[in-house]
Image 1 (cartoon, rainbow, N blue to C red):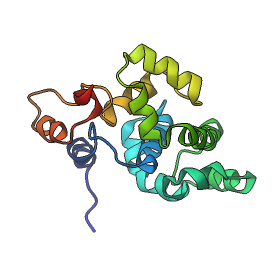
Image 2: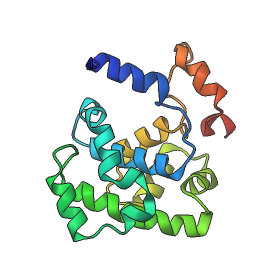
Image 3: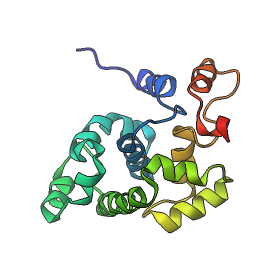
Length: 174
């Protein structure tokens, strides 16, 4: 098997994921988890561990992660395939619990995001800080850009811009 170079890895993410709207709560939760884990690290580190995160966090199944217990925390802290930061692990579990509450009120994470869209970045950041753990301005900005809730993931002259636009991201609907 030929391993992709760092440039290829970033290009693949840029061309197929960054700025494209996500369809499911698991995808949205997964992206939030990755953005939180990127704090203080390079995006290359996160891309290298992306598949491991999905496996370690039960395919980003919100209900399963919300039920993680002390054994799961210990398993995650011992997993060299992910970022082993106690605060980030605790944030993932607590955010899954909070997302269950959001789903009970709004039906889904996506509905909650759509309910609050559009907003300026400062308003989004305030909302995320009130709602979730471990979400600062840069984490919120990248989450919203990468999921299509804020414009700016791609410049208009980027060949991927037209592909993203065809998927009708929230910033285009707003």
